[in-house]
Image (cartoon, rainbow, N blue to C red; front, side):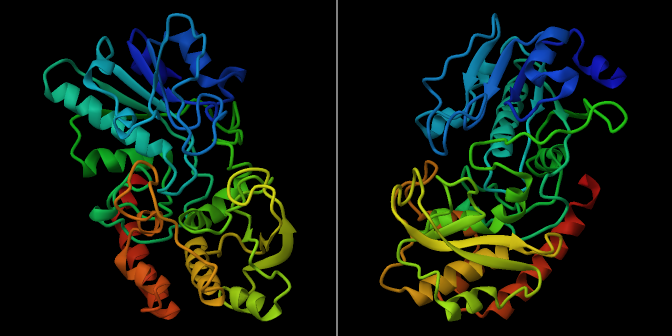
Length: 378
C-alpha cells in the first residue's frame, strides 16, 4: 500500500471503474478510494456502475448519489459520448483506472480506458495541466492464452482497437501500457495492486450482465462473433455465449453436430438442446442449439471454433442464415461481422475462399508475433 499512498494521497482523482472492482477493504473500490483519498470525478463505461444495463443501451438516464463526486457517463447516445472532452480533466491530476477486462478486444471497458487516456494526453499536450495514469492491475480472467490476428485499421471501432488481437492474453495494466506506448501517449503510467494473495483475494464479480461466470471468458473471443449474425449468442439465457443457436437449427441433426465437433477433438463437446431466450434475439421463441462444454479449456481455441461454427451453420442453412446489417456500436458503414472479425483473410474463410487449415496456420503465425511483441507487457 506504500506505493498506492504515494501515488494517490493528496491527488485530485478521476476514476474509471464499475462494480467489477470489488473486494478491497470489503467494499466497492470507488467507495474505498472516495473514503481514503477523495474522488472528484467518476467515469462510467458501458453497462452502468452496477452492470444494470444490457449491451448497446445508453446510460444517460442513470443517476447515482455519490455526494460531491461528479459522474461522467462514457456510454451515451452518440459516438461522441464515448470520449471525454478535455474539460473533463479540469481540476484533475490523476486518472485512476480500476476495472476488470475479460481478455477479448470486443469488450469495451479497456477501449473506454484508452479513449480516456487519449483525451488526457490531449489535455496535457495542450498545456492545460499534468495527468498521471494509475492502473489497478488485475489478472486476465481468460488467462494468458492468445488467439487471433491484429485488427486491421479500416475495421477499427469501439469493439476493436487497431492492431489488437481477438484474445490478447494481457492483464488490465499490461494492455493499457501497451496502448500507451503504441499510441505514443505523453502520460506518466503507474501500475498498482490493491490486493495480494496474503491479504485480500481477487474475487470474481460479473463485469457486465452477459458475462455471468469466469468460464464465459474462455469462449467469448469466438462466440461473440455470433453478434454479427442472426444466430442467438444466448443473451436472454442463464449462460450467454456458452448456449447458442436459432429456431431454424435442428439440434437432433447428428451429422451437423459431428461437423461442428470435428475440429479440436477431445478439447470440447457440444450438448444439443432447446432454449427460449427471455429477451434479445428470438425472445420467447424455441431455438435449437448447443451448450459448449470444455474438457480442456487451456487448449480450447475459441476464435477458431467461432469461425468454424458460423461457416458450418451458414453452409448448412443458406436460406435462413444471415449476417446482420445496420448500425453496430456506433458504426453503420460496415456490417457487424466485419468489425468483429476485423481481418480480410479470416473473412475470406467465412465466404468459403479459404480452408480451415489455412486460417489455422495463419493464426498460429499472428499469435506468435503478438506474443513476441507484447512480451515486455506481460
